[in-house]
Structure formats: C-alpha cells, structure tokens
Image 1 (tube, one colour):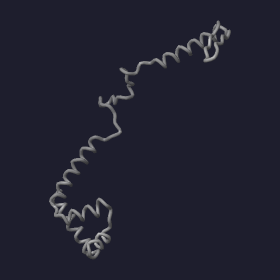
Image 2 (cartoon, helix red, strand yellow):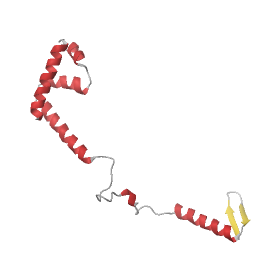
Image 3 (cartoon, helix red, strand yellow):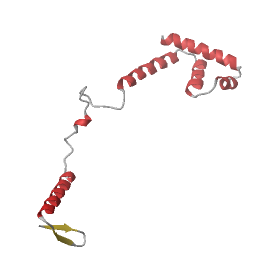
Length: 129
C-alpha cells in the first residue's frame, strides 16, 4: 500500500505493508474527525450536576445572597448613625485605622476613642438585632 504525504514544497509517496497502511489511514481519519468535530450543540455530561439537575458552579449562590442581605442590613443600620459615628466606623472598620490613630487624628485620647467605638458598636447591635 502506498501512503502519500504532501508538504509545502514536495509530495512524498511511501510503500508500506497493508497492516501499517490500515493503521496510518485510521490515524489520519481520527485526526480529521477530531479537527472537524462539531461542538456547538453538544455538551459533555460532565458539565451537568446530575444530582440536582443544575449546572455546577464554583460560586455558592446561597452564601452570596445571605451576604448581600447582611450587607444591606448593615448599611441600613449605618444610616441611623450620625456623621461622626459613621466616620468612625469608616475609618476603623473599612480603612483599617487603629483606634489610637483615630484618636490622634481627632484630638482625643485612645481610651476616649475606644469608648466611642464601643458606643457605636452597641448602637449598631441594637439596629441589627
């Protein structure tokens, strides 16, 4: 059996036994089929979560919804604070400023800043519970 290979500059023909020829033809057919496989309308069963019938996701939707609800409650509670208290929460909890640093910036002692923080947390706790 003759096998023909076409290159950019030349064509080569090789004589092989029928067994090897069948193998080469089969490999060429597999390469052709792989290159021309239709994938638009097909989906692997591995993409489905067969237990729940839903598509799997790395994201925990329930946790995300609960977190969004908690965030909404927190922002509602923050809206009940006065401007100074909101600024304290923003500085200490969102910007990562220390209590002593907050006290220095506002001209109060560290214990006074700590007491303000405790008072704000109690107020937030009342709104959240």
